[in-house]
Image (tube, rainbow, N blue to C red):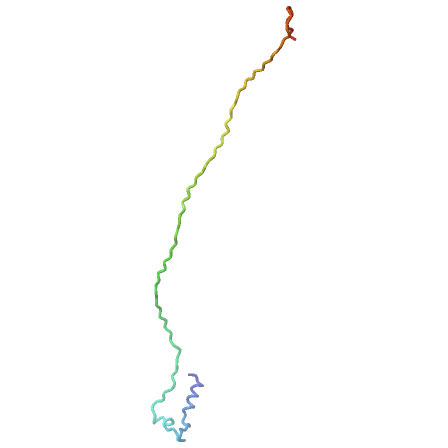
Length: 110
């Protein structure tokens, strides 16, 4: 409680107060005739305590894998260029027609 709050409480309970019959309240004014006074409590800030608790959880985590096997086929095209040879033999023929010969005439080679 602050200083101003203590003064307000003390002033409201002092010995000058009269009760409803305009008599002095001697129980409040004479400390010899009364027990100890109970003052308002002084409230301190709380001491904080932290209590921890633990709950464990199991989280299944699935990491799937997959393997694809690829079988490769390769076709190699081999081109060849075979060559053939021909031999051609030509025969030319010539035909000569000779006029009829007279006896004693021979063909001339010209």
